[in-house]
Length: 260
Image (cartoon, rainbow, N blue to C red; front, side, top):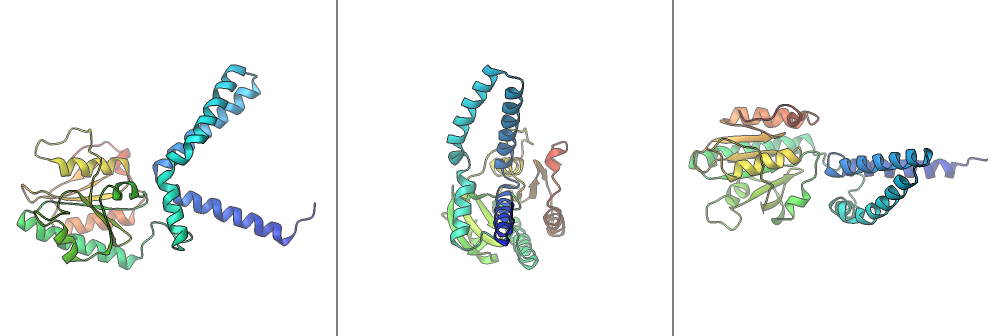
């Protein structure tokens, strides 16, 4: 069999496509679903090897149903991929933001939360890392606006249309506001309200960094990996945001969960 330069090009294109596909779903719940499909495939191979006809038939039927359901299950990922393809961004790092943008976003969050804390204005800010937050952004109002102190502070002004809900920050921009986040089922301190439950809930399901300003006490907290860090001043909040952003692989959720 003769191998031509076109064969190498063909293999290269497929490899790049697979790599970008893995980047797209890395850190999302789709990864766990793919692992489940791999287990089913391995079980099907073993069942055929040992001539387990009933088990093989059940697995074949299950696989058919799953393949039909895949477009529904992977809808957020497929939609995001098509949107990025249309914007010419498919071959960029999907959640990679320039260091300068990171620093500017962190500085803005710290500055705004400090001002809101002094006035005891409630706030809920989710910073996207590796896991995409598009499904939560779609529950709110799409902004796709440049992040700034004035805009972020105005969003949380009492009685403003976007006051309730969370702001989602993606790649140094305000992706959406007034977003609904999943509430944790973990028992928290009785002093912690709905904002804190939403912050912990999102951090349990994703690797997002979620900043909360309590409307009652003005206390600033950070939820990450299913844990909540409270009573943060400007310096501590900045240090923790920088620490967790630079150490994206760190996932406290796998440690013992709790509040501190």
